[in-house]
Amino acid sequence: MIVRNRSDVACVDWGNGLSYRFLLRPDNMGFSVAHTTVRAGTKSRLQYRQHLEACYCIAGFGEVQTPDGAIHRLEPGVLYALDQNDAHFLIAGPDQDLELVSIFSPALRGDERHNLDVDGFSHYECAP
View 1 (cartoon, helix red, strand yellow):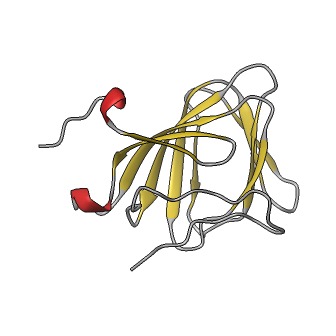
View 2 (tube, rainbow, N blue to C red):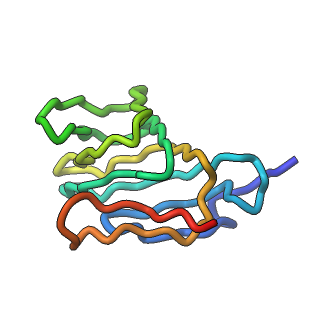
């Protein structure tokens, strides 16, 4: 059994927020679980080319937007899943951080970060 407290796990600044990574590749679960904070007022261009991701909103408000402009409002109780390695914009509302529980498959190594300064959509590379 694995039991972890947020104060005991790695916290990674992924670019526009923080990721508390509870389950990682060495845990041999086949997926990762993270508590993700997206800083208020930020807009991130993201795409996970080698991971599938599902996010469940637990606090704050924001939007997930497709490159063609479709907008989906995020608020507590809403889940979105990137089931086709979808490129997307993750937008946190202006007044409050957006908080998500993020599930990744396959599992993350734990040290992945985004490069939000590149052209196109930032992505994590998956090491063998």
